[in-house]
Length: 460
Image (cartoon, rainbow, N blue to C red; front, side):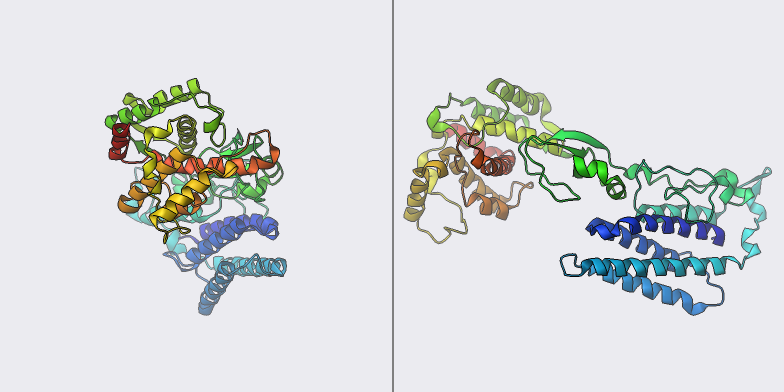
């Protein structure tokens, strides 16, 4: 590998590292991770398939490698919660800066010793007067892409410098190696080393919080209900409006890791049985008022049911957003289901909750009856009975892959409770919390096996 090109790549890494220097004092774990990634790139550059030559100083490379390993271990063991973490960060920054300077000096010293034999083309590399890419250059292109994939992504607000690369720290972090950076005999095959970076940008869109628990990825502040926030459409990255506007450089260097869509498979028989259960709907009275009232009215819920659970959509590709929509629709319909769908004598079939795993059947029944008669903290009988049966399936056959069994049991040990009206402001946070518990439970119920739904219909 040509030393000049290797030096250009290292200067590119130094520029990226300089971006991290500007924000490392903000005490963000992701910035430390980005710095760690850069150190990995340096280590690869020094000890990989294309080791850097440091002239006659044979021990210099091992010293730098040892410094890199020690610094990376210090980053991995960094505890931001400890006292004096700011001084620790300043010390880490100083070490990285000194290390980067040493690497740059070593590369400059080594770069002065040119090896002309590596710049000459073999006869079989020339065809019809045009110079072809050597095998070494082809391997280097793959190595370049690997180095760049380990580097931190940059935001589109930073100007891309497409001019000839100059070995200076004033060049933009997203600089490209132009054709002139290669030897004249290989200009037609120059590789754009930034081609993989552009695919890692976040794509933000404006969303409104629909009474869900969401936190800003940077400041960790809770996004209040009905407030707007920015969310990446390809990953789970969430920012409040403040951080999105004021800390753009900070979040822009964090990689976007897209979430693959999952298949939500329902065969036609399961869809028919689901619809049979959902058709057993009666007008709910005051005594059946249940948890939080969703935004969907009855007609909208039926339309959603037809849309997502129709026979023509037996296998539906859904995103995380669609899962929440389906859960909200199912919750809205289950609120109005008749309690007699599952006989009340099954209430004593409680799963092994941590709070009652040693209870007798009589104690379990008494506990359920007392909870039902306890006003605001009353258990909705239908939801409890359905959940108890479903937990048995989870424990025995593990039908659901979306929710942890232990989390389900721990959360539901407190039971689904009936909350006051939305107008009572003091209870809004509790309503939001319970609404999320509902969503988790209904997400599991959507994955229940077909035999259970069949038994529900037969009991009716």
